[in-house]
Amino acid sequence: MKHIKLAIKERKTVLDEFAKILAKVRKGESSFNESELSFQNIDTLRKVLTEKRMELLHAIKRQSPGSIYELAKIVDRDLKSVNTDITVLVNLGLVSLEKSKDERKKSKPSVDFDRLSVEIAI
Image (cartoon, rainbow, N blue to C red; front, side):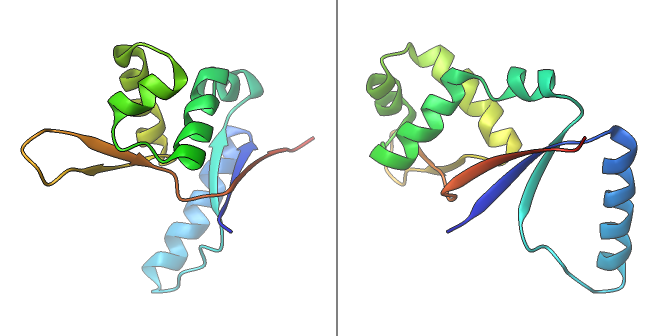
C-alpha cells in the first residue's frame, strides 16, 4: 500500500531537508522511503486539496474511469472544471494521465496510492 504524507512545514525546514536529500543524491545515495508533499501552512493545503479535488481522487481510485470526460460524468461536474482540477493534481504528482493509443485524444487518469495523511509540526 503506497502512502503519501502531506506535511505542514516552515519554508526553512523544507529547504534544509531538500539540501540534505540533494547532497545524498550527489553522493549516489538514495533514501526515498515515502512520498511527501510539503505546504507552508494549513491554508495553502486547504486551497490546493479542496473537497472537489479529494472527490476526484476518490472517484479515480474507486471507479477507474477511462477518460477525464468519464470522470466528469461520474462526479457530475462540468468537463472544464474537472480538467482544471486534474491539471492541479497532476502537477502535484497525485494523479497520472495515460494517453490513449487510438485516434481520439483521451487521457485515462490514475492514482497509485491508497492513503493520504496530514502531518502538522507544532
